[in-house]
Length: 251
Image (cartoon, rainbow, N blue to C red; front, side, top):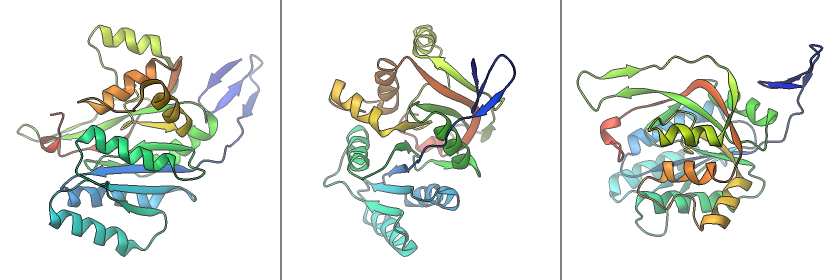
């Protein structure tokens, strides 16, 4: 028996639909002094947010104009499924992500979560695609790739890597082998390109004491994850677009 995408196929060619799970997704949008970008990120999610799922806007801004604008925007939506949060104090990025995900863990019945940074937008239909993949493999971490608008250099370029739409099961051993050879594949589950079961977050925190405690919280999460799972699912498809690279802490 072979697993192909969302179906299980027998050697005789019989195809069986996998059961659909009840998914409640929390999309976490961490932001700091970039209210204009955060609003674009929110607007990319709202039209495709599944019933029962929610958006958590975690605002770590230090500038009043950004705090006031973003809070007014979220409250003006008057939606129970879009929530504005503020950490109790100014935090560095790893600490902010850690705090934001502690809020996710406290919300009843949330099954899966992901990060959409304020420099990213989901493509139309992307969340529906991910919801289908979650239903097929609710216990798996699912990663995906992205397009990028690179404004870190001139001229500005749109980077569109080729993709196939194929869903693969990739072993942690293979991703670690590639990393050891300085090849950091887009399948690496860095949270900002991944949908993760909430139970996995609890496991990582239990083992390591935190999820993101590093100068590079996304890669920290990826390698802690690979140390704890045998494999992940990777959909070879660009489901989001990242931009404003010139504003990236990593860059």
